[in-house]
Image (cartoon, rainbow, N blue to C red; front, top):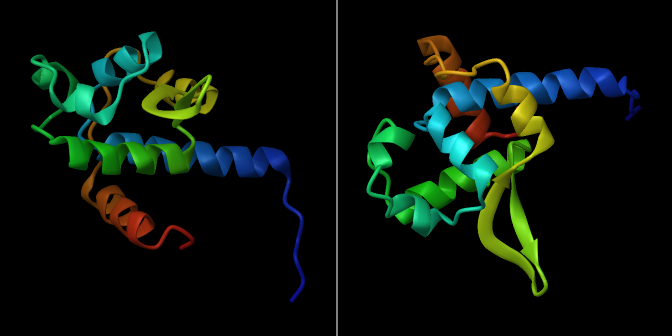
Length: 128
């Protein structure tokens, strides 16, 4: 099997497209990402916020929130915060995440049906 080297800018563009699609398909609003840009939060803290309607399109428990945060970490939109002990359960926005969100200063537009199906497939088969 022969491996073909790809242009780094091609890989970056692919990562941006994948991340943009995911952000549009997930239930988080723009204010959710602003919150994480201002301060690191854990899935439990996010799920217990009284202003959840401002941050998500549906009520999410801590487990569901954690699952979605892990997916955003895998895509490079978020990262775990590090303290003196190592990684914490809190997350923050990455530079890639800021690039993705720069397209939508107000609200994130919802994805169409085809995009949602493609995103669903990517989450179940990440290398597809």
